[in-house]
Length: 154
Image 1 (spheres, helix red, strand yellow):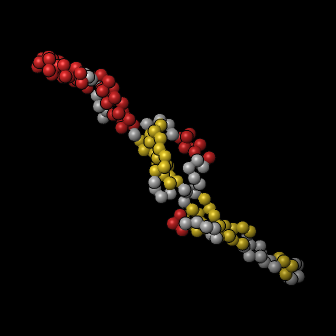
Image 2 (cartoon, helix red, strand yellow):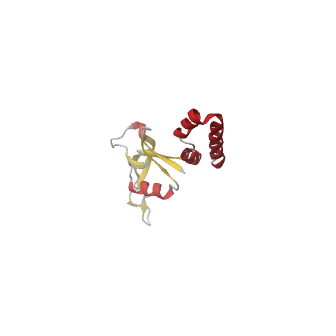
Image 3 (cartoon, one colour):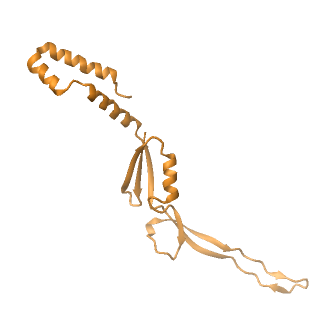
């Protein structure tokens, strides 16, 4: 059992889910941008929070072109310098954290099963007030049998 926690870029949990196999679900969420934009690249001139910048990058728009000479050595085509575009890579608007909650889930399940089979409060009250010590010992034996039947997971 896994717990999927979706946090916004400020680290605040906005959604969570407990599920057995999360792989396909997360892929679907990421593809549909369900919780915000993934890591992305925008022009350096765009409006963004500087705290979201992962790195600045230069994107090559057109490569440099060398000058072209004719057979007599005259320049036919001037050299053209490379053209780059300044961009910034921004962090995603959300993060996905997956934690294994198998142990917690197993413990909850164990305790739930125990609770369903433990002697009821009414049985305890009757044994305490009306049954005497023998009834309380019998009730404790029932309780211990339930603990043995549903041991706490390791």
